[in-house]
Structure formats: C-alpha cells, structure tokens
Image (cartoon, rainbow, N blue to C red; front, side):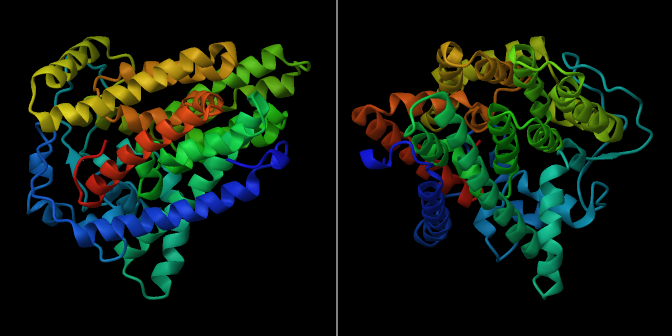
Length: 415
C-alpha cells in the first residue's frame, strides 16, 4: 500500500491509477461474465424477483434494452434513463393510480393527487440531469438515445467513483495516518456494494458529492462544502443528514459567524427547496407504490421480522443473499459505532443514515446503502495497517463484489 518513503505524500496519483485499473477491470469483467456464463432465469432470490427477471422482462422494461453497455443497466436504471431522456413525466413509464390506497403503516401523502403519478418521481434529479448533459451530445453524433443515456450514466458513475475515492482518502488522511487514505479509497472500490459505482445508478455521484462535502468541511472550505452538500441533497434524500456534521463543525469551530451558520444549514435549505418542487410526488410514489416512508416503525418492525424469517427458514438461495444484507448493515453499524471515539460528527452522520434506512419500511439493499457511511471505509483503513486484516478484508470484499457484479450484469437482483 505504498513504500515507507512515500508516507506523508498525497496519495492522489496512486488513487487515480488504482481507479483507472478498477474501472477497466469492472468494465472488462462484466463483459467477460456475460460472454462466459449463462444464468438460468428467473432469479428466485426473493419472493418477488422471479416476475421481474423472466424471459419477458426486457419486453416490459424497454429502456434496459441496449447493445451499448447493456449489462450496466438493470432494475432502477430504467428510471434514470427515462428521466434523462424525457423528464419526470415520460408517458412511457409506469405510474401510480390516484385511487391506490397507502399502506396503513405508512404516512399518508401530503396532498390529494388528481392524476396518475409517474414512478419516475421516486428518484432524485441530480444523477439523471448529469446523465442528460452527456447523453445529448452522444445522441447528436448518431448514437441511439437509450444507448447514449446508458453510456452517459456509466461515464458519470465512473468519474464520480474517482471523486468519491479521492474525497474519502482526503478525510482518512486527516483522521489518521498518511497511508490510511489509499486504503480507504481502495476499500471503497472493492466493497461488495461498490458494484453500483460502475452502473447506471446514482450511488457514485452521491458519494462523490457527500464525501466531497465532508472533505472540504474538514479543510475549512465552507463554501465548497455547502455547494457539494446541496448537490448531494438533490441526488439522494439522505443528503439532508449532512446538516449533522455541518452543524457540529460550526458548533465546535473557532468562528461561529452568521454566514457559516447559513452554510451549515445549506443541506436543510436544499431539502426544503426539493420538497417544494418535487417532494409531494416523491412522497406519493414512495408510500403508495414502494411502501417506504421515514420512521415507518410499525412496517419496519414487520419487515425486519420477515427478513430474519427468510434468513433462518428460506431456501439457500435466499439465505445466502440475506447474509449479504445482514453483513452490510452490521458492518455499517459496527464501524460507525467504533468510529465514535475518532470523530463523533462523522459517526453520528453514519448512525443517522442507518436510522433512516433501518426504519424506512423495508429491509432491502443494506450493503448498497451502507456505501454512504464514511466510517465503513475510514475504520477499516485504520485496521488495515495490519497486513493480515488488509489481505483478509480485501479478499472477502472482492469475492462479494464479483458475485454481485455477475448478478447485476445478468439483470439479477444484487441489492
């Protein structure tokens, strides 16, 4: 992880080289897996995944039908592609009926909707907007629009992954030893949920913006930190929780000016603006179709009960996947608690994020959502000073990453 002579130097050059190799390997591995393997459909990992992965699935989800990087678009990718090409009101996408009744355990939407609401409204605008900026010139040179949007999404994700790696490395070097930065960036790239950093998914952009905001905050660059935090809020709802480390930095910092107080509240202001513009439709779709809501305690209790029932009593296929979920959530919780002694603000930000995830009404994709927790990479970066831990953590992460990458490449459920 670097010769002793290099200690104290910025790991930027090494991280860029590692990222280049990682991006090439991810792209090549997915193409190789699709050429070498032939998974039997449908995917019966969960009780509902079979109907989404049968032979007719691509006929129903035509935005996922593209010869350009097709293995990099699956599941929620179709929503990002739709928004990038046609906006939120794309008539080709599925919608929620105004007559549908919300689950009794989930908070009711804020207003009565007079018309059907597109499922696109469940997804924040930051990532598909960035995709559209790249997709339009690609379409202009003759690339099929869906293929152009898919290619644009992968480009945004890969470049954002580099930004996220550089940002978490900068935070790690300020929190611990100089070599911790390269380890934190590498552990981010090989975490099993990092498969989504190379797909048409918003994870990488959110990490680049949120980790970047935290890195600038550590440097005292409040304006840049606030700007990236606003971008993170418009990419994912949990970006509003960046207000926690921002408020902490303002409270314990030397300068408690009114200007910095406003910057510290920038994630909250951005969230309120998003709520004013798109929040009502988001709440409507989330509650009435996806069955999710903040602090849906009753529904979450039932969901966790079902989760552990699957873990203990289901077929090996389901149990093996639930173990990945359990490990992702447990690792995020353990590292955030352990990091409390090192940095209470970052630990509290991670714990608050987990609190939202654990009580959203569904237990799904914990290893993917755990990517947003800085401590998940900062704590192992410190433990990775031990050569034994470094090699075992790397091996376990890479094996998990390979399985999830193969699954996603075939359109099977990966979280």
